[in-house]
Length: 318
Image (cartoon, rainbow, N blue to C red; front, side, top):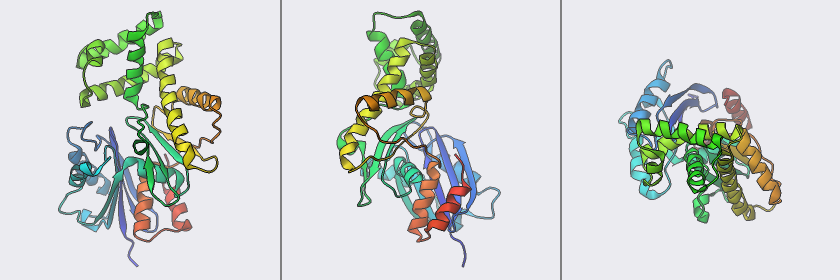
């Protein structure tokens, strides 16, 4: 019996990851390119998909027409109003197969829990929180009227909010601000001017790029940088508390993304959870989100069992 071919895609705000997986769970080719699929953060998201498709097929014996199933998790796909631009990302004449297009949090969730109950927090270029009901439906933070401000840009926003409202600025705080202000002026405008501007793709991208300086200076004992990190941890903890009533027993939590996986922020989060009496275990994300996309595709093609699951896991490394 001929093996069928799945294209699994993780379309983020900054990068796009694509892989080809056969219906027996074997990974054929896996690539990552600079450039995401979120239209608010990228100037040519469809062009990034097209470039990724060309690269993931290169060096294989497959053509685009041979792909039997596309499963893609797309950052920024939050409602039916987004459906038009999401569909357009994969509208290519040679890619006429069935397509399952979902929010990127769903494929990340599946890659971690693989059908089990748990809470996933995404804290990187973007932010999100998600669980899966026993009935199989997904519940997002936005469904609870909550937005977790735990993305990389929020870290920079927190730092600036505290800086401009604080009368006691230490030398190390001022040093951090000067570095960020210099970098901001080089590409846009002063930080003070930027804080008064509405959110935009350029502003959010800049603030995301400045976030690593905040965590670096938090380790240099900048009080303001430390407070900014604590605010991110607090946002995650608040979301965990909101989801707790949906589980009847302690449930695993996994946090993915460069901000949420920062050791200092995780330390603050654990301390915050302990203060609230929350004892849910935090587990690592051992598989990349494209594994979740591939798993959804395998299930859709009715090619899912424990043997295929184990083969899929062994084909990937984070």
